[in-house]
Length: 54
Image (cartoon, rainbow, N blue to C red; front, side, top):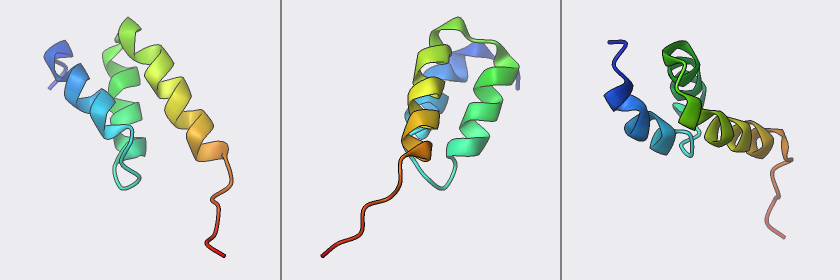
């Protein structure tokens, strides 16, 4: 399944908490240059503490 045509769908999945990690791993393994910044943004978002409702 190492097909770079999947990269847009995988980048879109970076916003989904359920599969974010798997999408990032797949993008890294595909070595898609255009995915570097989306993966960085997803990682930064993961590092931010979740805000709780009042």
